[in-house]
Image (tube, rainbow over all chains, first blue to last red):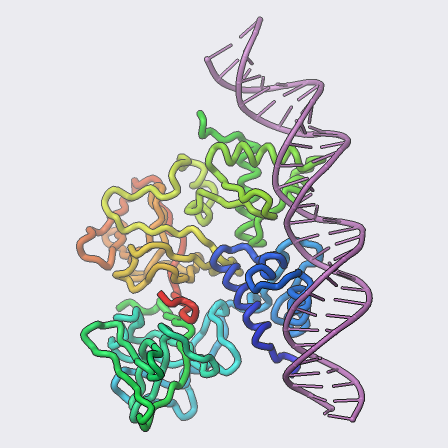
Length: 207
Length: 207
DNA sequence: ATTTTTACCATACAAATGTATGGTATTTTG
DNA sequence: CAAAATACCATACATTTGTATGGTAAAAAT
């Protein structure tokens, strides 16, 4: 696994990307250390060395905030779309995933995550619309308020995830729909993954 | 002329903007000094103080590369047009519509496309929301119904582009806002680029 | 079972960075 | 014309920043 990234390293990479897009200054070692509660910068330095060795970042030595993201080089990368979701309907998986999308590299796509195309307007209350591509990470433990893709009795849904009193609730953004409460006895229930991003290609879409 | 900027100060401001968009790191005092041939950083410091006093930049004290540009909406305006625009509030609202958007954060600038982080909800009718990142390509010829980023006087807007009878119209998704008609005589109008995509990171955003 | 990797700690240090102070000469403003 | 602003200089100083070195404990790989 020369390219394998550890969870902590991924968190640090996320932080760097976040800083860069949001505050749009790459962070200093000290800022990263503070954010993660490290008592010194040396720890961060070692993580950055690991990330550099694995090709995720490039560092300009002796340059403050000199962290470059190597995933910058390519702005768009083709990615396969695995299937489609529409609330109420089964999750359709394309057998050969013929459909692909040019995904911008700013969109975080961790190793095992996959793409689904949204059909219909059932998610419009979550600001996700027909034709949008959602990025789903199956290896994240869903936390409250996360959007998750879940399978309920053969039907795939995209809803907000909440835990309460040992049972799981799936909330819709539209208050007219009552939350679905998953009791322990529930048979066919499975959280497929957490929605970590949404991408919409606009250029051709003249609506 | 408390807001008047000297030629040298303008050059330094240009350099900061350039650095920020091109190498996308704000420069340090030393880098600015080197570029202009100053023998010390104190000279640069005084220029930055002047620029700050005049409201062009904001500095985070004791933060390396902590130069913030307050005139953000000018980042992506071609310089020649910029020069004629009076400095002032970065977000002047166009009289005919509230439908302007604050686009302060250029996150990345690869060969052609760049990113803007959307602030505010004025684009919600176009399904673009606060915090979303829009991908803008300045090298595409806008066609009818394309979303474009345009600068009108001092205001940056994201609207649908239409051509009719030789004049250009900018339509809002919200029908309550009347289209802005750009006549040939219009002074400060410039299409910055075409919006080719929208990306939203969701995982951490508990909204 | 041993080695390697991971994930932290502490301390030290040179260079970079922002700032402060004081000075000179020129240009602009009142 | 006098006063203020501009545009540089030099030197000094406390932090910040990146890096280096050495160490510990646990997990993962061989």
